[in-house]
Image (cartoon, rainbow, N blue to C red; front, side, top):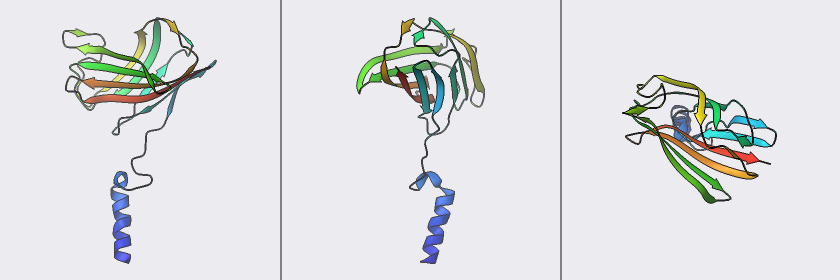
Length: 162
């Protein structure tokens, strides 16, 4: 019995993600912003890596140009990069949106064309429609992926507006 217990303990130490309990731990929840009735939180849904993201100014009134910061180390080359966004409220789909960020013939950002192992760090403006965020709680699934459908980044976000 002692041998089995020792083997189980060793297995738990070597392969923690396969063991029960604390295995398969989720990434920490990050606060993008929290100010004047608006809170935006996210957690990476990519089991292999986390990433950094922030918004310069937190406001219920979303401006047409917002400044963001985003950082990640690439596990894949980026020839083409796409963003999928799914917005839900109270379990119902509100919006599904797809956007090409990097295309071979039309790179929109300086990180387009980066290679595996390189770091992406973008700090600057992002164009979006101007609107006021309605009161409520929203869940957002964001996924960045390559032309081969390999995940670059994935996030589950929560937006709370009061």
